[in-house]
Image 1 (cartoon, rainbow, N blue to C red):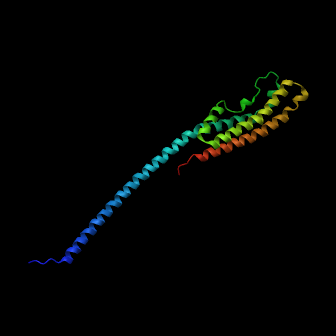
Image 2: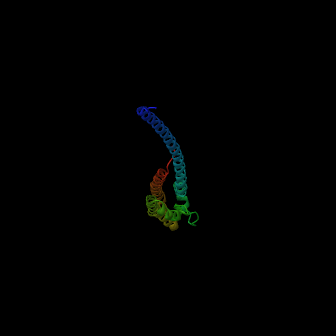
Length: 187
């Protein structure tokens, strides 16, 4: 009769099990690599979509800040003395002329988007109406009086207006920089 060498059988079974374990490990590594690659692609796609959403949400505020800066810069370089020397009220600036017409509407939307942005825009709006807006009112009063002695105050008022406006323009630029920091940039 044939005698079975159990040591050889056990060795053969152990070798077969080691081969099966190696094959299983190799298969698990391949599945993991495939899953990680798919996950990385999904993550990159989600990141891209998130960036697009944030960009779309930031766009109206960026536009508002850019238009406000441009409008105030144009007012800063404008000769207001000659405007207010004419007594017919044509071309006179009012406090409402300092900001774009849709500023208040977008300001209200900013409250839901970002509280810091809302607070900075509210502060800038308040500063514009309490600083340069008040100076414009004084210039209008001086222009309405038409007296030569009072008209000599216009250059001083224009200097004050420009100085206050420069501060508010700088605050708008800082708010715009803060807004740009909120937008993630692809690397």
